[in-house]
Length: 311
Image: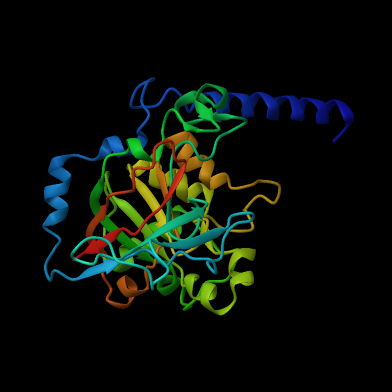
């Protein structure tokens, strides 16, 4: 390719990229929407999902969050227990009340978490064309913060990618996209629908307990094509038993968290990270009622969560 051809190719790439950058907003839910794919939820879908409950068994999908939790640097966690007395002082009142309080200093993105729509953007532009300068303040987000979200109650679907690909723990860098998602769903006898919360089991969470450094160094996960496919189907949220959901390293070496951009920024689909899917996978619980009432910290970008699956 000569210099002229190279220049034309570069110009076409820039033009194409610019076109792609503009076609994701305004949102399908309207130019003023701040909730994204949560708009797919409805009382009718909740009632339908509730019919999946057959045994009453519950599964906590959240992992413990603490000072030893693997976390993306520089995120840290600190807990201080404040005693109302030192354990030997005079109790309060005639009923001799004693007690403790606690002070926690932490990043919201440690352990099991939900990523809100204000978390990742494209060149400082976030879901539905919202510019950072208009809603990101050092005191909290003024739009799309976690406290503004309604509860996420929906049909949950677990896709066991480790089982489908024949390994107890998938290797870091293993990507799954539309073809693998469709094949795994078919093998499990489930059909993905609008309004679903889709979770992936890769076995990667086991690495967190064995080797936290290795756990954070990479991971198997969702590819950009798979993310676009799930968004097209109308998924409300997508999660995995890994710290970033998406495949690490990225499919394109020069890109950084492109799946986050595809889900959060372009499509308003929420991301659930570090979901403990092991018990669900063991029980072959492919469909269940998913319930999440996220903490309502005003202005929060993310939140530590413990969603519950009920079947």
